[in-house]
Picture 1 (cartoon, rainbow, N blue to C red):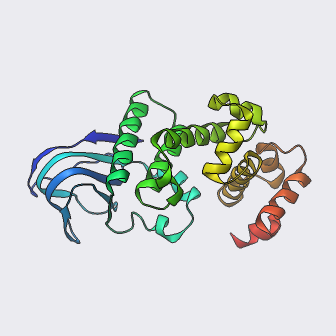
Picture 2 (cartoon, one colour):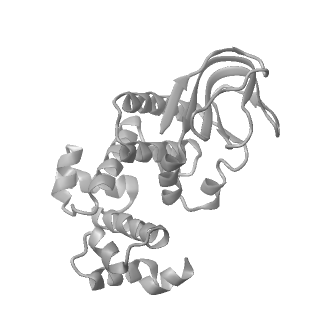
Picture 3 (cartoon, one colour):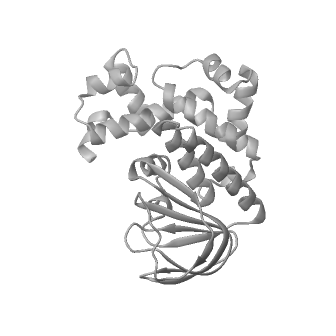
Length: 258
């Protein structure tokens, strides 16, 4: 599902980098030379991150003193796309692109990478890794501007909350449950969610449920009654009312559009 390796050494373009999974990133900490693709040569610079399209061999020419080679499956990438609907996210790996990080951004990026490596070694489940990777991509691509202002500890707390929410949103609606999972008091969790995510727990749960509803209505063969039950609604009418309030159209109208 995901492969993360430190990368360093002297490279020449005769040898391509190997990747098990289709989504590829080169995270440069310190280097000079070029990343060579069919579309051209791109300068390797300190604190530069490359988002590399699936097609085409990846070759390096020069020296990498420190960096990471990250590749992951489309399954993990899907969670990022579900959370980021803007064209910038969808086009992130369409063509080769890169982003130069500030010193502060680079420090957070390398810390997140180190933590991600530990999560992989501990064999965290796919749901957790998908949430972590989504947060990492949103941060490094500059799509989640609010994350840039957070401390590393706060970034880790956001990750933990999203992982807990993604696992239990269908069955747990109590603020007490999520507060205990975060190791916080109810009051502290409420303040954290309002300050960092700008939404209450109730709204975040509803958003997650409706996002899953859209996914099931679009990509599954379940009936509306079955989807309502899967999402924890005791009655289908409660689901259809909630969906219309959230989307502004009925479930049937949505199904006709997809």
